[in-house]
Length: 174
Image (cartoon, rainbow, N blue to C red):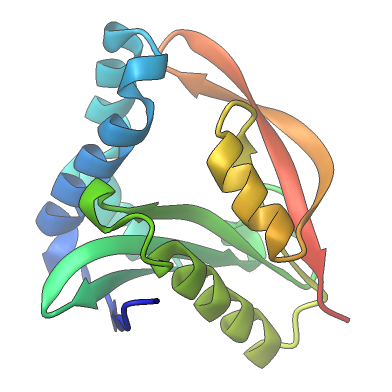
């Protein structure tokens, strides 16, 4: 049974809370699979409050907190237009980040966040929605495949000094 979540668009004032949950969820998901120094180096930059404020204020980017019983349990970052990392000239929407706290996983919160992203893509009349997912993140890949996403390429991702591969997946909407 899915727990119902409420979504809340973030402002730059919430960058501190975003930094905390970003770090917690990222380390819970990937720390045991990667070098500690690479994880710390990546997090020091990617989850820096000033970096996150800049991302929140970037035109075409939007973050949402997922709340359950008023507690922040996850978040999603969506990009359109030039804010996207690939497909910038396409009429598409990128799901750049989607994370749920470990104690709330298995409650279909990630699916609800992804369905919200699909609703946003439909509302914007996007041709497709896409994302990058680490090639070793098998559970996420399975979720995306269940929801109709297909492999469409790959790109490099630097985690500290470790060059990794993200699979690009997309779902055609029209």
